Image (tube, rainbow, N blue to C red; front, side):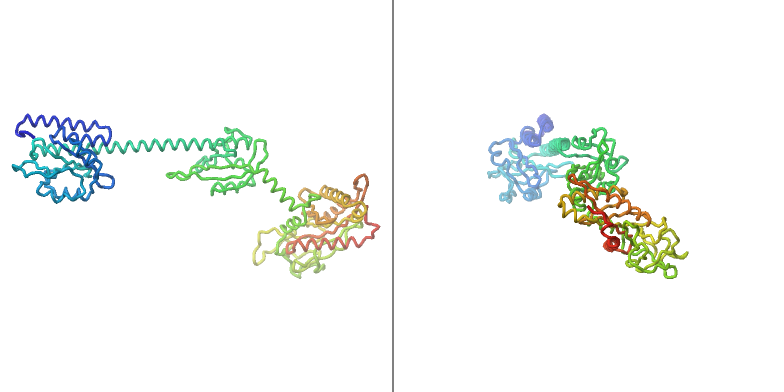
Length: 574
């Protein structure tokens, strides 16, 4: 600087410095700010050459801006110096306040480091403060919290001298303001990048929401969003058109319901378990017309990272047709294909469901009647009435037998209405199936009626199997018409049928056998001809401690006893 002692020179310099600092605040980007910093050195502080070395994210410094020399810019711009090399320079330099100065006499030790530079050798100074081309003057720039942002390197003062106190103060002040400007520019750049990223994320979110909306609304199968937790737990928040069509209800109406309002009562537990755990379930939902539709529900919990699960996304698929086929297959597996009655396997399953391995309580010998032990409680029935088997006792699977003549006051009569002392092991919760032991109408049990058709073989032989099949179908219809809705009529095989009738006393079972036999006897018209069959019945009583096979075998034996007790003339045949 020329004549630093002269006030007018300093005032002019101060004005240029003020303008350079004002220019720092007009830059629009970080790159513009760095270049403005370099230009301000040349325009406002009377240095012919300046470079701004900017700290990169990895810590090294890159030459981000050069001013005053196109050759220097071409040689240095974009080149990087390591952080270690720059720290070495700053540590080696003579402290001029915040500035660092390395005279040419010491700078030679830095010629081999990787910091980009344009210095050339020159003659020795002619006077003590003359600037030498190898002199290095650096002005570090820091953020408000002390972070190193970069280093300004200057060269070639216009007056050819090393800067004095005023020049040093001006450069130091400018570096301080440049640090503030760079911090602001970097903050603006980060904010701009964040805004761009936020806008992209919002665009992606809007695109994702639109994709979800279209996938939700136009999905071929039903979809619903329901509340999780709170007072509105389970309420349907949103449904698509496919679900509305599936249930025959408009979307506005569905928003007043939850799935628990629509599910079949028998499937409510399944729904609650699936809603709590997520996953899949098959259940029935009510349509607007009151019918129920089989659907498959697949639930996905939509979680909120801060507040926990909030919504449940449910996919509803119509499986009515598949369920119908499954039920048909199950029906075919458990029912006779000719008559539609339960088959032998289904009969045994239903009978076994009423029995357990543990016998019903047995009275001690002091309270047993004279009937004594015997086989299963059973009886035969024919045209002449009850067979003698009804008078027998029962035991076998029960672990003992007793007659029909009652119990003492402290016996096990509780099974039939009396008082029963508690066994040592306590009671279980199974309701035992217990046969009636007398003709008392109040004693009821599960009656098993074994029916065998008389004269059926001759119809098959004379008129063919198609005629025999028609007879079996009609007999099945007549048997089904003669029992209660909760009774079971099954085809055991061939011309054998079994009836399970619960809640009957001995007299009721005998009356039922009479009614069913009388229903079978009337002629059956097949292809213009009338054919007739008779029927023989054997009656046994199911009881816990017996197996289904034992009960059926007992009824079968009683049926054959009754059949042999009558002559062929008394058997009705076609």
